[in-house]
Length: 108
Image 1: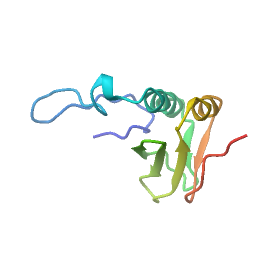
Image 2: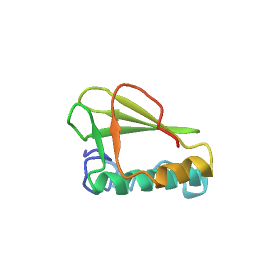
Image 3: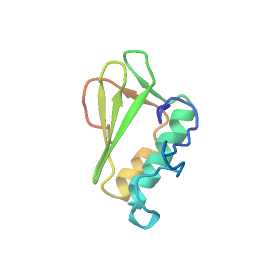
């Protein structure tokens, strides 16, 4: 399985049924989380998500009010708030994300 933030587009499928995998039914997806994941995916495809350790492979842990980026190499973490439209607008303006030890996403 390839990582979400590896810089390559990835489709995930159930190994038993072949069904496409997602975060839930379309009606149950939080539109802010869904849009934040799309923004992060686009940023990753452009090489805009890296860790200070030099690696760019990340796990994404979704929560109701935030996303956690976790470096697969060193465990560095970054919390990205996704509680409301303002958080989404802040994320949309970002051109590059650098993950280091756990910290909050910088807001202007």
